Length: 406
Image 1: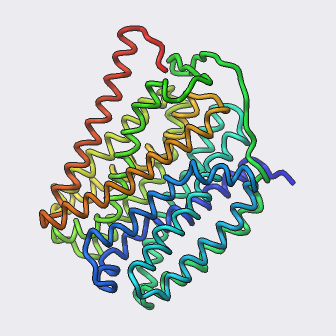
Image 2: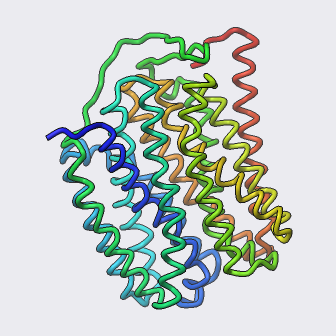
Image 3: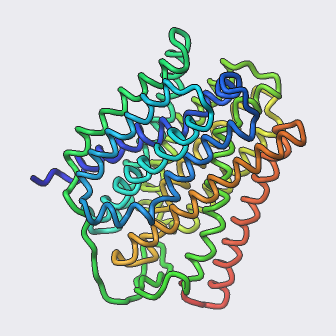
């Protein structure tokens, strides 16, 4: 039975809300984990670092499994395992065991959910405009989950222990199983001829079967993806203690984080309209959203003690974060044929994963040795801004020299 494409898109959004939203919201428990297990910032960040990095980084490894056993069956099994990981972790009292269950096993399981939900969109939508709208709608799920789960966690922690809260989260994740029923049984490969197409913005894009390592655009995007996910993971892991350092109460820090996640929802929707109405090229959109995100994290890191600055930067952090994660699949879809898109998305997700793993660990190490949360987060933000400028310079060079962007 085949369901309407937008029904499947809604299921993708729900998957992102449950799997990605709940995972990124675990930063609420950072200080609780430190107290419960007797660990430091580096060890606490390691749990979330491994979890987030494997969600994206395991994509090339889980893709062959998905193609062999099918999308629907993989999602059903992944939903059951994701729920089981949370329930099992609620009984653990050993840090290493908790790290393996929540960091490693849950990360691999959520990776399958993430890549299935991402790759099904180009399969059910043939034209680029519909794909951008579908990608934006699906990515809204992560923002909705990011808004709801911190609120759910905060509410549950007022009545229950953190272990009971994790157990209840496992029960919530069982909803992934019925959602899997609307997905197609298998992911299809597409073959097309090499060609150069002219997009709505008037930029020549080489959509070719050539090896990805020969594409300058693909290669330049990878270090940017690395730092994007690295800063995102570090921000989610340390935003609460960062604001505490600036004298912001836990309740107010939760409000700031909810603003970030709430504003990320329109941020995820905006690329569909800016592409289809204003005709802004997806490359420039990604650069603008990424620069907005990095600059806003930098402002929050330095001026978080000023309540107005914290709230204003939270708005732009959320909008930029939502936009850049929504636009990146379309940026790749605009550059590569469907026959290469599975690999391009998987490799890029792997880059996201590596950045999401290494950066928070390095950030936690710097925090432990500098005694402040401000300097490490500000430095990473500045690095990301530098990468965005490099991408823009490459694009400008191609336009000035009238070179086809590859």
